[in-house]
Length: 135
Image 1: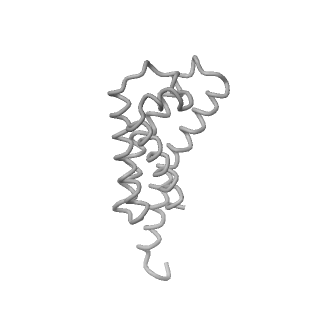
Image 2: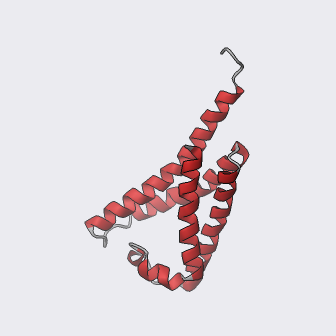
Image 3: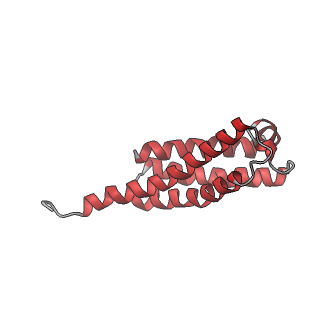
């Protein structure tokens, strides 16, 4: 489960980050619901793309080596972004259609929860490994 959640987060960050970094205007024009945000800024788009690719590197490392020393910091770094991002979109839905509201809320909630799930699953997994036999 940890690797599956990390794979989803890694692929999400890799695609979004690459698209934003390499084709920022295309991302702004074509990614669902981005048009609901402030006007296009190439600077912010490329910064966001670079930061997102940085998260993908950390998540990818945790995916390949799923030890707590990698998974917890990777998931915590992702969650530091994803949870406020979820709440931003949750409070900025006034110009969105019903479908856009459902998409934004659901997609952002799922990935925000996946980051927390990785942390919880890692802690549970490793707590089980620390118990002495027969307890």
